[in-house]
Image (cartoon, rainbow, N blue to C red):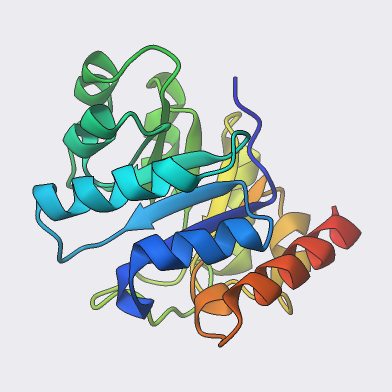
Length: 205
């Protein structure tokens, strides 16, 4: 099974061109990048993912948000599924063997459901208030994250409002990885911020 890094970086089109954002994240040292473009059609997203794969470092992994079809056609590492996306079993049947599949969950009940499904990691959140979703799910807080981490055996990716300032508490709950958007992409020098995040992460893990 692929070992998740501490930093799960997301190239979110809400902050600019996801292709350029992914390039900067890789330049800063990120080695797992999710491509997220909620407003793009399949053709546009496919072009973006293929462009990113064209320059991604050999040891990097590229995950497509929501779209199993784009992950398949592009040859990406895998897909991240939301609660209303394609069911995990369908996605697993479509994608090549060893593809990475993750799923978003927002409470312990949802997380436990995926313990018996073929997912590689369970994302849990939002842990804190987040501005990257128009209609976010209720905040689960550190207590909710700790509950999920203790209740499942699969790696947990914490998501939602995570910064370098609160990451220590997130990892202390048992999370394997922290999915980060704003605390990387809102800065003028994304590559430098990513490098700083990785340095901080190495000090707390």
